[in-house]
Image (cartoon, rainbow, N blue to C red; front, side, top):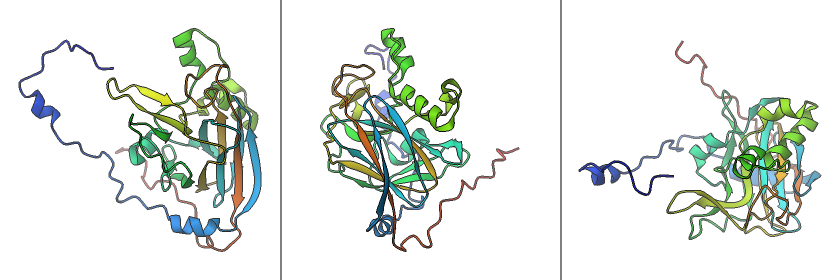
Length: 287
């Protein structure tokens, strides 16, 4: 946080310096657009091929083939979830929350894409439907589906409260990925990374610009749906904060399960569609 009482006097031209107009760091006009019309056509009549129930304060993994859809559904009560994605064939390629935020903004919705880490930097999944798109931004600057919170974790909980809490989303995802890969949970931990906070309502306070959460507007039946651009392993944690209306990283909040549904197109809409290639940068880094 910035100091309430700065230690240095503002220079004479401080007002002029602060009045400089901002510039968007990454204009996205040249990004290949998400073909939502194509995805909508492909979704018509899609066959449900499976589902995975995520228990409260736990995480599970699921597989999504390229060219199919997955939907995260609120089924019993207000509940947020932390979503990780990995390339199903190489978990070193994983969701890059920071670059996704730089390209699409702090909160995602229909048409936004979840981008992968270097050196591939390509779309992993595209959001195709969002029943909370009506929310927009509220009077506090809050919105849903953020890529600004990293995930609740036991290290920060220990730092702030001196606890050893094992059902933070980070730990939940570590256990789920360890089970998925057959690796030791400590060995796999480095592959668990910053998330898309599904259904979570967050923002930054106006005065101190601190990250805040508030009660999620999600209700049973709401969902966020994605198109898989590459073969994916997904990991979803039903956050121990429940609706995130009071606290997280504890057993006191009321929590509910989340449901992941998988859908496969049955028409020919995607007959000429292909997965996006890896980033074309030559990786020479000037050497």
